[in-house]
Each structure stands twice: as C-alpha cells, then as structure tokens.
Length: 556
Image (tube, rainbow, N blue to C red; front, side, top):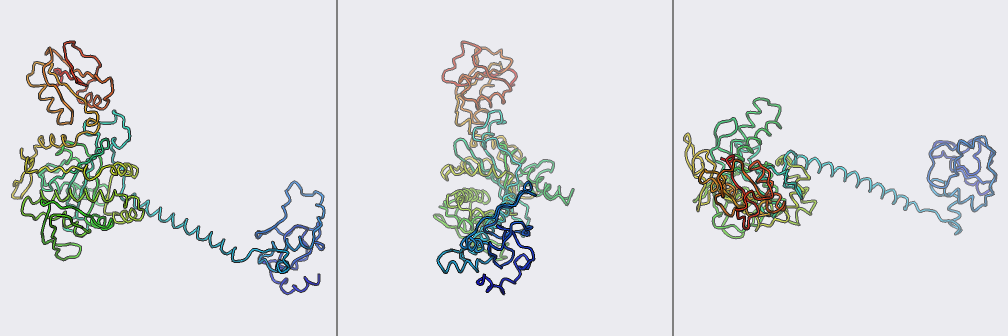
C-alpha cells in the first residue's frame, strides 16, 4: 500500500473520460479501474454497483453481465496475486505506465512500446488515404471514360460468336466506324469535318481497312439540300440549335446522324459507330504516346508554310520521304496540309490514312494499353475533345480485336486512285468540288468498289461456292445477279441457265447441310426465301457448288 500512496499526485488527475479518480463508489472485482489510480484486489468489493459504462480503452476487461443475470447471486471472489493484479493494471492504464514499468524493470513484465502503437495507427491512416485517393482516381477516371464513351452504337459483329439472325445483311459482319476530325474551339469554322474516314474492321479474319472520303465531295444531305460533305455535320447541328438553342447534345447528335446517313449512302455500307476528334485531342494523343515514327513514302512527302491557330504563328512543315518522327504539332500539320504539287486534297487523305494507321498501332502496342498512366493521360487528353458512341465494354472488346491486327493487315482504300479513279474534281456554283466520275450523286460504281474491298468477314471465312442459274425467260438475268452477288463478296462460280425457264419463285438449295450458316442466312435475306436441302430438278449438275440459286420471276 505504501508504494501506491506515492502515486497519489498522479492518481488525482482526471481520467481520460472526465471522471475524478477518487469517486466514492468502488468498482467490483474485474471491472476496469476508473482513472489512473491503481487499486489492489484486496480493496475491491464484488457487491458494488458498476460505474464503468463508458467506452473502454483497448486491453483486458471483464466480461459484461447479461440481462438474464440481473439479480443473480454475486460472482465468487477470485483470488488475485500481486503479479496478476499488476498485469491487469498495466494493460488497462492508458499510457502503460505506473506499475507495469516497475515489473518491466524487474524483468517480470513486458509492455507494448508506444512507437509500435503509433506505427500501427500510421499504417491504418496511410491505408485510409490510399483507399480515399484510389476512390477519387477511380471516380475521375470513370467520368473521363464516360465523357469519351457515350454509348448508343451497336455492331453485332463485336460478339465472339454472333448468331446469324442478328446480322442484317452482307457487310454487317464487319465493324464500320465513321471517324470525323474537326478544328474545334479556337479555329476558323470549328465544326467543319475536314477529315472523314471509315475504319472498317473484320473481327473474324483479323484485318482492317481505312477508307478516306474527300472533304469536298458534293453530296445531297438528308433534308438539307446539297453541299460539300465536310459541311453536312455543321449544317445539321446549326439547324437543330436554331430550333432549340439549349439542347446542345441533341444538336450534336443531329449533326452526327446526318453525317452517318450521308456517308452510308455514298459508300453503300452500314455505319455502326462514330468517333469525333478535334485538333487538340489529336495533337495531345500523339504527344502522350511519345510521338509516332513513320516510313513516309515519296507520295506523302510534303513541304508547306502553314498558319498555326494555337500559337498564332507560321509553321514550316518539311517532311521528306523515309523514316520520320512526328510529335503532336508536326503530326497535326502533316495530316492537315493539302498544298502539294500533285493531287492536293487526294494526297492529304492518303497522309491521313497513313498516320491514323500508325497512331492506332502505337496506342494498341503493349507499351501503351498495358500502361495505366498512359491510358489515364490519353483519357485526360481526350476529355471534351473526343466523343465515341460506343460503350466501354464495346471499346474493350474492340481493343482486344485490334491487338491482333498489325500494320501489315490494314489496307488503305483510295477513291481517287490514279490507276482507276472513282471521283474527280469539278465546279458547282462557282466553287471547286469533288464528284463521282459517273456524275454528281451517282454512287453505283463507288458502292460496288467499296463492297468488294470491305468484304463481309463471315462470307470471307466460309467462302462458299455459289452457282447462279436463270430459271426465267429473261435473258442475262443470271449474269446480272451474279455480278451483284460478287460485289457483296460472294464466291460466285457457275453462271448459266436452268434446265427450264418456268420458275415463278426463286429457289435456294443449301448443299452444306447448314455448315455455312452465315452464307445461308445472307442469301435467304437477300432473296426473301428459305433454303431447301434438295435440288428441284435431278438434271441440274451442282458440281462443287455449296449453294445453288435458281432465279425465279419474283427476282425481276
């Protein structure tokens, strides 16, 4: 007892819960001492009221009584040795001082060092900070992603094993993305889409094509009369804004819809998605991936003095043939200039296809798409400067497909190929334009060419041999229909007359027993008839054909 009286000055301090240590009531055996004054077990009574109904500090505590034990006989007094008493007090004292220190000095006890406790608290605090920051970064990345990937588009061919019934027709077995490039804010005519490309991806055979449309192509836009194709988006957008100035999102969508419909009409292929990119996003994307290296062909070499709207200074562009490195600014000027000594805007579209292919390969390289910092930087660069009407899941699926498509598997398609041009220059209302060789608004030759280049992936994989027979009295019907099927990518073999010319309805015979299900699906939809498995005339020699089509009078 004398030893504990020496602690009287410290014992008279307030406890951490604000209760004075020298409270008149005494706690019972096993309860936590209130305050810092230690009590020996010999002075504790078991029949006193509990007063420790406060939040307890960590350490040893007696088990609380259950409600069912109220009024029960008091628990028997447990003998407590001086060592046990000291150990109990050492664990319950907030600072671990007092009696515990005496035992440690005698080698009979061991207390937790304060540094370990603070280290634990520091670790927990750091963990909380990491969790909070991680949540903030995730939220930031989430909103960035949803600014870019707006959803809305749909391509059945993105599915790993698409059901034939989901494919609307030949060409739907590809993924066609309309890429539009505009100047954006701070540029003269910010909504003119001077870059118009279609990126067409064959997910089945892992190939892709980039097709450019000249920005000066004269077209008739839906409900808006005629104009150059680069003004279709802007005109439709401004008409919508004039109708409802507050609906900027709706106006932008109206512009996109008009551009998609116009491009689909010119090329004769469906558009599944669109991507809108302005100059700033393009430049920052190139810088983010560390620039682009291109082996520039002689046809794409260019020298030009250009005005930079960002810096308000002139820029000297000098790109020679051979290996060249491009940072963001040089790349932007390279794809924008059209002041060349040969084909003008046609050469510019060639440079755009060349660069888009190189940039796509760099973004899909292991050093970029597996680097979360690079991906985050790309999303920051894109922000309000890029819009895609595909979901994030579609984008991930497309990225996985793109990883298997190398630069050697990307074909560049030019409508103005000097060997066989499909478009040429002309004049309309005193302004220079580009038009089809066949005439303004005549796209038949363009569509046949494009369909042949953008062959349906499932047709290409099955490559079923198709025989076309004329079952009518109309001369040349089989030849005409065979040419049409070829333009859609069918592998047409024999073209001839049927044994008789009395077929009123077209007959499709599937000799593969359902093996070439995609070809069967497309033919059934094209001719609006269900395929059979047996030839209607035993005199027909099918040979190596997988499908036999006997044209009836309903095809005229």
